[in-house]
Length: 288
Ligand code: SAM
Image (cartoon, rainbow, N blue to C red):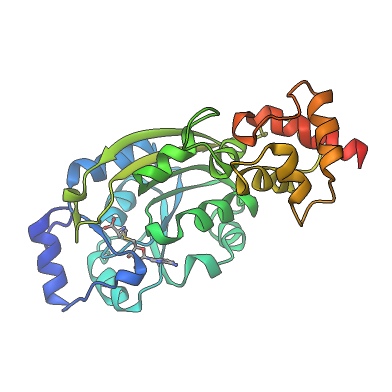
């Protein structure tokens, strides 16, 4: 069995199985051992940990995870990769491969079965086309989680960690920062993958908060307000909230709340911090 995590070993395995890359599955396999080591070390995987890997590909990072973790669950959508994974992961008895779409897996149930409901770590080189649904799915379904350490598109990683006053700040920044503390661990060039993606990449670690950093009466309501604020980015927040079809708020009520909280009637959503959105959402609930 060739060593994976380098171009020669990866090409050898791909040739042996006559594997054809599927663009629609976001298949860009890692071929740089330095980056692989960096991801696993940033995730601080230990022999206590149960790790969920999303999209193992040919099993390159899975091998690193199997060496460091107690148990690895790897969910791969592409059935043509399953025989390859059986081969590359044959030396390990602590890996379970599941041939499924991660967006259809009941991860809470899986964590209950495999880790008795104790928090897991997620480590992955994600398929970029479904980054946001994967992350928001993990957070919103309240899967027991310690951290998520993932390779994603560089621009998306930047959006996750910025605050007000930058063009990248938006609903994704606020959603991620409500659930976790983000930290970019490394920027990664397209040269580190086969085939090369046409975007830059970054490894980001999201440390799940046990308790959210702000006090919110109704999470769902706050996220509706946040989405409305950034859906109409160029409008004032009062207009954005007044126009939102899924919120029972009039422009006059929004203006009253913004003035009462000292933000000013003409403030834009992009100027508010997470804490300020929490205050606004809590206040609006009292006047509706
Ligand atoms: N982990 C491998 C590596 O680092 O070389 C492969 C990473 S590649 C960027 C993404 C992987 O996710 C591919 O193997 C792809 O088939 C798989 N994938 C794509 N969509 C998926 C989905 N909805 N559920 C599970 N796996 C998926």
